[in-house]
Image (cartoon, rainbow, N blue to C red):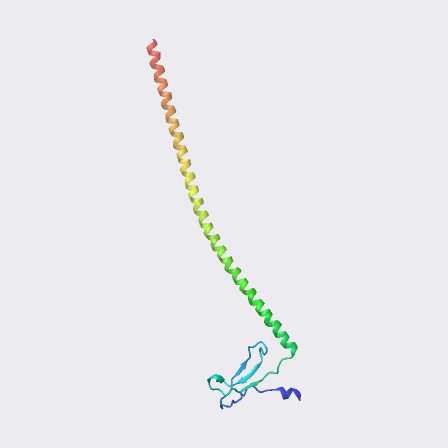
Length: 153
């Protein structure tokens, strides 16, 4: 029988002193977190009648302590989520910086390849010029030797 005494039909809302149907609400306060109640839909400051009735029984001291611990854990969890979000943002920033550095490295490697090709071309031109100079000196020596030989005879 005791169970029936605590049973409240929430399908039929209460009527407040303003003769209005009261919406079913849920408390968000620390001391009554999660408890449901009927209350006048017009706030007392705005001329409402102030009607109020709890639907759920007041939690025991153990439930109250549990809710406080749960609330504390939720705060810590949200703090952890914030830390996690900051770390995720930091990771995105680092990945962006890495991508930028990879692009710069790619550009530098392309410039290095171009410079190596130019260096190779300059070395080849230098070798070619040395070869031409050597041919010219050799030809000059031959001409001088032939001229000297004919001047002797």
